[in-house]
Image (cartoon, rainbow, N blue to C red):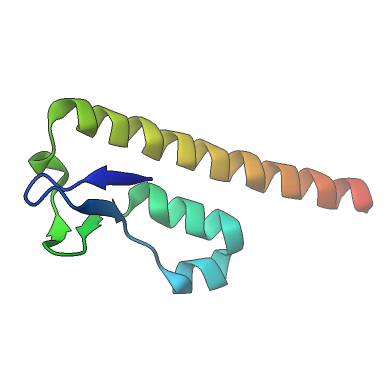
Length: 85
């Protein structure tokens, strides 16, 4: 999900890591994105506090949803593996 940069109005998105994706698969990528900082193409790294309060609460909610989604996905994979054995 892209947010508007508070400095220039351009797109600001969450950070990503190919290393986390390779090491942890989709679960690793989701967990990294849930706790990663935000970057603007023009302005670089952005502090969460530089966004308006309503956007900060939306960011927090989306981070929590990504974290829960990653844990649910991990639980589903473990349940599938247990069922196959």
